[in-house]
Amino acid sequence: MGAHVSRTDFEWVYTEEPHASRRKEILAKYPQIKKLFGYDPKFKWIVTVMVLTQFVMFYLLKDLPFWIVFLAAYCFGGVINHSLMLAIHEIAHNLAFGHARPMANRILGIFANLPIGLPFSVTFKYYHLEHHRYQGDEKLDTDIPTYFEAKLFCTTFGKFIWLLFQPLFYAFRPVVTYPKPPTLLEGINTAIQLSFNFFIYYYCGGKILFYMFGGSLMAMGLHPVAGHFISEHYMFRKGFETYSYYGCLNWITFNVGYHNEHHDFPAVPGSRLPEVRRIASEYYDNLPQHNSWVSVLYDFVMDPDIGPYARIKRKSRGLKT
Figure 1 (cartoon, one colour):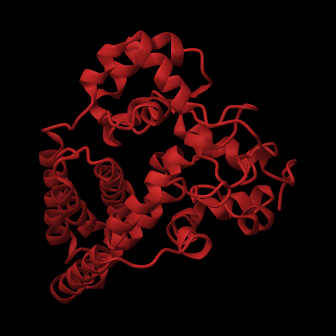
Figure 2 (cartoon, one colour; figure 1 turned 180 degrees about the vertical axis):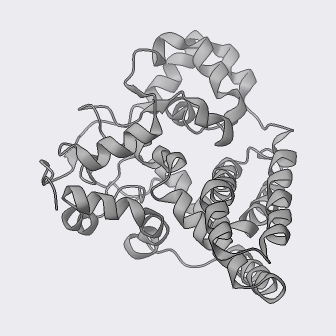
C-alpha cells in the first residue's frame, strides 16, 4: 500500500483567507488593475469552436475501433472537455458576457457542457462562488475533501486511487456534504444534457458516449491537465493555501494556473491574469508556486507529507447576509 500519510487532520487556522486583504492592498497601489475587470469578447467564440470540434470528432470516431476511441478520449477529447470545464469555471464568474447579461452566461455554460456528458454547469456556479467567498470554510467550501476521503485514502496506493476517481468525489461531494434545493435552471441544464446524450447514443453509438464521459473522467483524474486540482490549494508549504502555476498548460486551460491572481481578482478574465501578475509582480513572484502539474501529481502520491489532509480549514461561521 506504500507509505502512510504523516498528517492525521487538516491544517486548522483562525485567520481570514488571504485574498481579500491582498486585493485591497494591490488595488491601492495599482488602481489600473481595475481596467482589467470585465469580460473577454473573444471567449465565447473560443468556446464555440471547442464544442464544434468535439461534434466533428463524434462523427469521425463513431465507426472506428474502440482502442482508437479510447486513445482519442485520453489524449484529445478529454483535454478539450477539461478545457470546457474550465470555460464553465470562467462562465461561473460571468466572464463570457459580463455581469449585465447573466442569462447569456448561463446559456453559454449549458452549451459548453454538452460534450462533457454530465450536467453540472449551473450547479457548479452555486458552489464555486462560495469557494471564493468562504475559502477553507469547513462546510461552505466543498472543494475540500471530506474526513471520509482523507481517512480512507491515506497511503501511497490510496492517494493514487483517489486521484483516479477524483472527478467523482469532486462532482458528488457537494451534494452529500452541503445539499441545496434544485433550481429550475438546474433542471433545464439536466434535461438538455440528457436529451443530447440520448441523441448522441442513438446516432453515434455507445463508443461516442464513452468518448464523452470516459474522456471527461480520465482528463479529470490521472492526467497532466488534472494537476491543477491539486496544485491550487493543497498545502505543499506550511501556511500557504493557494498556489499558482505558470507553465505551458495554461494555454489550454484559460490560465487557471494563475490561481493566486484569480482568487485575488475573480472579476478579471483568465486571458488577462498574466497582466495582473506583471503589474503586481512583487506580490506574486515570491509566493510558493508550481512549475509542473505532472510533478504535482507525482508528489501528491509519493510524498507522505501531502495528501487529502493537506488543506487549510476554518471553522464555519455560516453564510453572511
